Length: 199
Image (cartoon, rainbow, N blue to C red; front, side):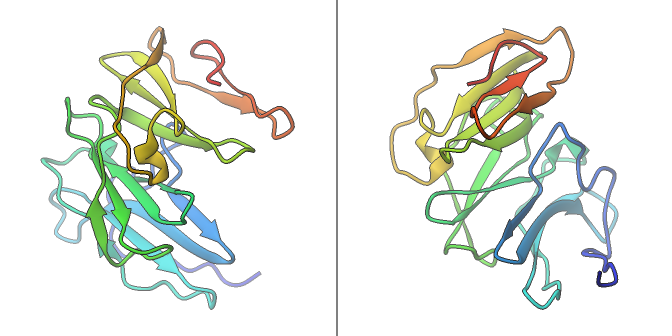
């Protein structure tokens, strides 16, 4: 095993968030992308993304955008769409219509970004799961303490397709608990202790 190498010089509280949010790292054919919060000036923690190439070299980080204030809940999460563009969702948790959704300008590239359509008006603790059939399920807290699950079939913006976004939410009360996921690749089912089956 090669010697571990740090991917960042600067960080912040929960620069890599815990299991409630994610993923914050993607891998494709030996190349890795990591999203995290950091600021060398120690003020607001800005969302960054960095890529490790096939030779194990971490390239220069890219700042994805600004944030309204310091909040470790603003940590970015990542996913690939069907065309292998990278999507980033960050600045969640603070209020309505404040989550920021970006998509890479080219497949597997993290140097240039464009704004992507909003996914939902209220998002906190976003967690993405990929099913065996490649459908994406986004599980998140919204509107106080309601847990929501949506799929890329219902939200084309998640999969890089151009379409009108509707809002047919399926919500369950979470009793202020956090979702824990279990599932199997064989069945394609994802279950949560916070409510009924997510799919």
